[in-house]
Length: 232
Image: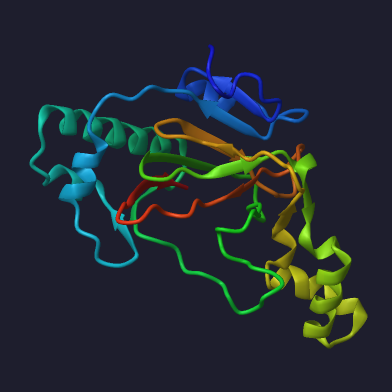
């Protein structure tokens, strides 16, 4: 399988959904990609859907009501199949028509929104699945090219001022406010764009995880273009 991800040590490539969900993360690999060249007109689906809020969840019945061309129908069948595969696997996939996410601008020295490089955390063993069908796609980056923001001295000092409580409660304060999930990218680092159509499985920080969680971020949306994103 020859593509833009094949030389990346962080990424494992698979050719089926079964391999995507059954392949173990190991070593430096904390992102698995079911690499696909999808047919179909996903832009047509986006133009037929109605955005009710900045993020609008789209359900299978919403897709089924759309009057589409042959290429639009091909795209719809792909999305419905992806939703079914993930649901049968035991995941809870959500298809979102997305204008933008909410921004976190409360502090000028640290951000906790999804546009910041971050990892996902769960109390139980799980993974993050995502596929961008239309619009800007997310980025990932090797852990070696990042540093946890709470370990950067100047940021940590400001967080301690913000905490203003007992030292023994500081680490809990960082977790409760999700500060510990966010990462600073090293100068000269090279994020990897996840591109369109591929179904990804990213490692999450949980008690049974054997690899480092995958550091990723949501993209800045392009002007006047909505994203169509499957995520769970």
